[in-house]
Image (cartoon, rainbow, N blue to C red; front, side):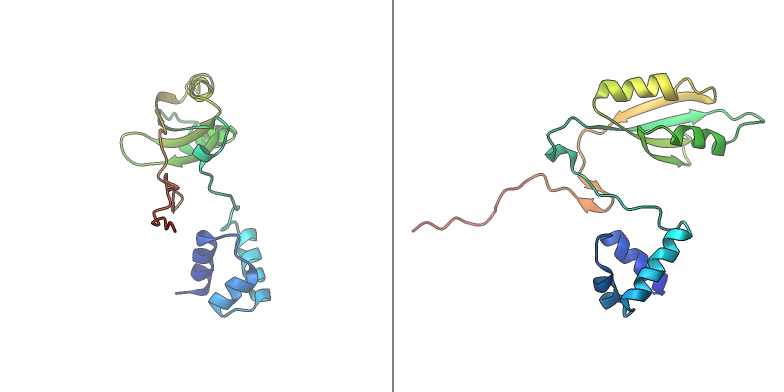
Length: 162
């Protein structure tokens, strides 16, 4: 495995791991790890670091939806232009051009189903190139970005009584 890939795998697994721990696992020095990470960041390979949040455990309303978009291109407008326009909305957490029965897969977040619906109907659907939207609200998340969400906090150890 090459050094860069090994470093990326470690960051994907836990981006909060210290450079000293990463150095121990890779055989590099902490200075070499810091330099390699800085190089990956400046080259745009590593674009950021974010937490994976289990919103069901937070006392705040949070809604996620996956929106399928179909678009119709014209001579002046391509996928790239449409994507740049949609990506600017803060409600859009992910945007991908995909193959299959629709063109873009958009992850949208809001405080309520009404917020998300309103955003899609008032901001996304009116874009001239957008011909169809299909919104799927996320009802439960079992795994996010490689991390499983365990719904139960049940302690399965047997109780011992005197």
